[in-house]
Each structure stands twice: as structure tokens, then as C-alpha cells.
Length: 512
Image (cartoon, rainbow, N blue to C red; front, side, top):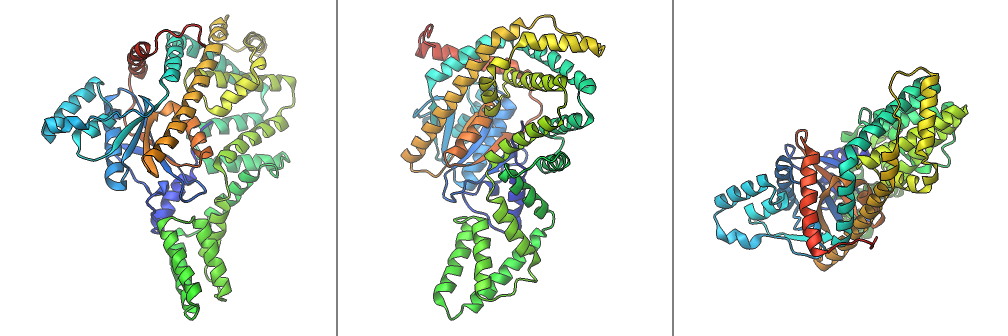
């Protein structure tokens, strides 16, 4: 399921509208529009939390590496980032080329680096290192032994990936066609709306409003889903606020509170301190607006006319109570509850189970699996009976006279499922190693922010781990045209890495 929260966009707008930019607030960071795209911003509850800008890497693609170089240079130049972490480089290793800068002019360095970048010899990070005079450190955060295991599994899967992917897609297509005959209209509507959300055809707010309406129509109580209830409440308030008016009303109330406390130096001092902390990002917007409201009421200032300020205070204090990680889990829980309420026949129940299982397998094969899906697979492995699923699809395909041919054999899926499971298990171990190394190196370098350049495949689990470990983060994707022949590019990168890893770590047979 897609995990991009639309409030990141709202946060960026609010910061700009109210002039509240803070150095370490990810929502205030802007990247070159021609080179990068903000995917998601997350502010940890602690305003002093360290910040990681996760720059999603498309390996060995010239256009992507140039875009990543532009984004990285802007982060260094405009926001003072001077520490860059890299995957696929051993933890603690120094991976910079700064000694080469003195060997050529800036023009010569740019020409030479560009040629190397086109050949795939260097990365976008190396390009910035060679073509600028910025002082920044490049540090590896990889556990190479784990990387080798994952790379070996990936190479083993890669040879069958196209056939596995086609088989999974064929089975999913049959399941989708069966829904037209087996599912009720309400089940189909739920399924279609979820698909539209996952394809970015509708936003999170619209999707949640649909689910809320479906929950009311089917007497599904949201009391057990508190973060989702908070999100619905804040979404309802958001549409009623004039954000530009909020800042005007805030300044008016703040000035009135200071004037009312002119003879109370301690209170006036606290007001000034809170205003400064607010502007520098040392306290959250919710904490500041709650304080301002209390200060105004204590000073007997009438807030009746400050309609937008009052509503925004309720809105932001409600929104800041939401744990986004829990929110998305609760959305999934609500979808499951709605399905349980709408499923009326054994046939519908079986089709829902098969469809969900095939989605997990498809995401496994196409390296789109998120942690929750992996956990679902591990917890329900006994239910992933592919022969049983195939029999169900064959019988019902015949029953409803579907014309799409049903595959005769699923052995290639059965053979590769354990390998896919191991691949993801090791991948998640690598993510844990990344986090450990990042935490250690931030402490070692005495830094509060850094850029992490890593393949987009790791994004879902890394977001989860960053949140659990108290980080704020910004996810940035390079802005490029459609990547052609990416499988070939990635295979080349994997082969090069495996050659190096085999030299560093001789054969690992029998060590798994």
C-alpha cells in the first residue's frame, strides 16, 4: 500500500504561508524543481530530532545520477548538509575523492567527472565531490556480508523474475475478472477505491473520506482506530481554514498579549521566548498555538473575532497527535474490517484471500514489498497454498465462463517463494545495519543532520526504522524521464558489486 501522506504538502504550504521556516524542519526544505521531487516529509515529535534526507538512488543511470548530484549540491549549499551516508560502502569507510581536486582545473574536473558518470564508473555523490570545492564527508554505512547475501539471492531470483512476474500477473488478472462475478457492488467499490489510491489517482484525504463513509454505512466503529479518527477530524477542519489569515491573526493576538503584560516582565519575556522558539522550530506549531491561546485567555483577550486562529489551533493540535505509522496501519485495519463486514459468501472470502496473497507475491517479485506485507506473509505462510489457489481460480473461471487462459502450473512460484522470503529478510537486516551505522556516525561526527543516498527499494522499511529511532526525515526522488532498460542497468550494477564482494568474502556455501 502507498505510504505517502498528503500532509507533507500541507506542512510545506503552512511553513511558507506563515514564514516559519526552521533550519532542521524537513517540510521547509526545497530542492531544485528540475532535478528532484519531494516524496514525503516527516517531523519527529522531538523538535531537536536529527534529520535524514533520504535521496532515492537509481543506480548507474546517467540522468538520475546528474539529478541526484544537483539535489545534493543544493542541500550542501543551501542548508549546510556536510555529511553523506552511502549504501554499498562498508560502514565507517571514507569514500571521497577530494584528493583528486588539486590535480585539475574546475573545468577539467567537470569534463572528466561527466565522462566517468556516463560510463557508470562514479556516482552522483562522487560527481559533486569531484566538481565542487564544498567540504563534506562521504561515509559508508553498509554491512558488506549482509549485502553479499542479498546480492547472491537477487542474482538467483533475477534469472526467473520475468517468468515469475508474468505468472503472478496472469493469476492476478483472473482474480480481478472473477471479482466482477463474485464480489458485491460494495466490495468492488472498496477494491476499486483502494486501487485508485495506490496508483496515485486519488489522494489520501479522498480515500479516507470514502472509507469513513463506508464505515458509517456498514456500522463499523472507528473507536478502536484513534489515529484515523484524528486524521478525519483534522481533514474536516482543514477545508475551513484561511491559512493566510492565520498569520495575521496570530501577530495581532501576540502583540495584544505582550501589551496586556507590559507590567509583567516575566510573562512578557516568556511570550518573546516562545515566539522565537516558534520561528526557529524549537517547539512545534501545536505547542506554540496552544501556548498562545492560553496566554491570550489569561490576559482576557477576546478571541471571538479570530475565527481562523481558533480553528487552526484546534486543527494543528489535533494533527500533531497523529502517529502516521499507526495511521496507515489503522487504514489497513479499517479496510479489513470493511471487507469482513461486506463479505457474505465463502466464495467471496476465498477470492479475497487469494487476491491479497497474489498481491503480496507480486510485490515480492517486483521488489515493492513493504514491511507490513512481509509480516503478513510470514504470519500466514501456511495459507499461501498455491496449488489450492490455482484450483480455486480454475474452477471459478470455468463456472463464470472467463475467457482468459488459466496457467496450468505454479511450480516456478512455489520454488522461488522461499528464496524471495530470504531476500527480504536479509534486506531488512541491512536496513537495521544502516540505522545502527547512521546513529553511530552522527554521534562520531557530532552532526544533527545528514543525507542518506540509497536505492528506493529500501524506502518503506527505512521510513519505519527512522521513525522508530526518533529521526525526522525527508524523502527526495530524482526527477527524470522514464528509465529505460532499468533491469539491465540494475543487473550490471549487481554483477559488479558481486564480483567485488566475492573477492572480499569468499564463497558462503553452507553459512546460511
